[in-house]
Image 1 (cartoon, rainbow, N blue to C red):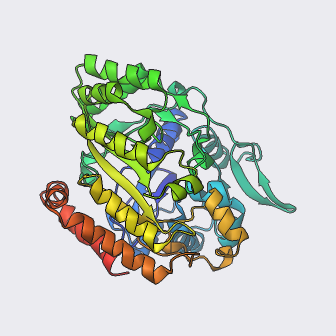
Image 2 (image 1 turned 120 degrees about the vertical axis):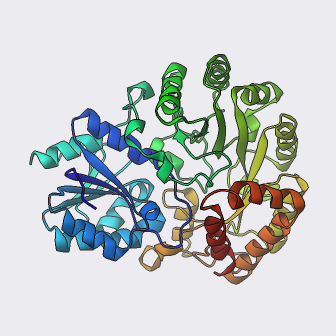
Image 3 (image 1 turned 120 degrees about the horizontal axis):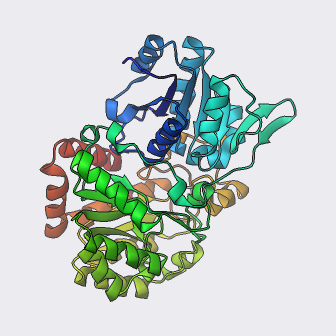
Length: 463
């Protein structure tokens, strides 16, 4: 693979991972660099089935590389450690940097543990990362680059983060440079073409690390700006289905209603879904009717648990009564809900998990996930588990930071029992007519979907 740029943006090698999707964060960075007349290349290792051996071949074929930036979730830690080591052995003069959710919460730990990384980046990167690349390529001082973290003689320096307040000032995503046909369309109900209209989340759910990247203050693109992007996707790629990747798309009722109204008035005729989830307490019959008319066909809803006590502990700010009422409203609107559940919260009992499994079936939805609770860095839960000795950073196996793995022994239910209950949840939920039909529609009949389905099943049942 010959790369025609000095800057390489990398989604790292991931083993046994079926979640191959366009990464909107890297697309924004790629576009921000282009705005500064800096060419870069995106390497999506999971999509390209890149191995460590192949990675080293790519490095040897491209001695011109000056900067390699890794996008990191916590599960990528060990993989990036190996990949960065190869960079320094093959291209010792190349600058390595890590960004994304993982370093936004644990930058010093990462730089201590991975000596082959030169820099870490915290928070949003559209302002700071192009400045960083410009400085490195021109051999200029990087000490004032926003969001940058690096080693000094006295320890670590954390430069002040900087974000774009008006999201209309974000770079235009260069969709014309992306071959979207290389990405599978079975990851969500509609083809996964991610579009973002808002950033921020004001809530304090103990298990969620969203605010470590995008903050708590809500920011918005203008409706006109969003529609311009949708027209580009239609005109360049013929896209008729997209996925709003926002964390809180429906939170600002006035903004969201206007977005729906303008979609209805437009000539786009685009179908869309919200796979990140919408808050159930932000919708009503009026909003749902607008959503459906505007093209919404699927909406994930973060339910998490059937225990009001657990919901209170995790600061979800919703109860099971509201969940039942609102899920019924969604079904009446013809939008198809997908339930997002978690099991294995610290202190949760077997009886509470059983209740959650039964609740998912009682709600009569035909698609759901049962994730094992993951203590994500940057969350209140993670800090509590570290403080109380249930987690130890020096003993973490980051490879297990997946929704089907048990990463620590928690108070309440043992890891062995928890894994057994996850298997039970999937079997009990999906071995019913409606969910089986949904699986067939969304995986079996789509190219590559059956392979991904087997990969997911293996992840659930073989671990």
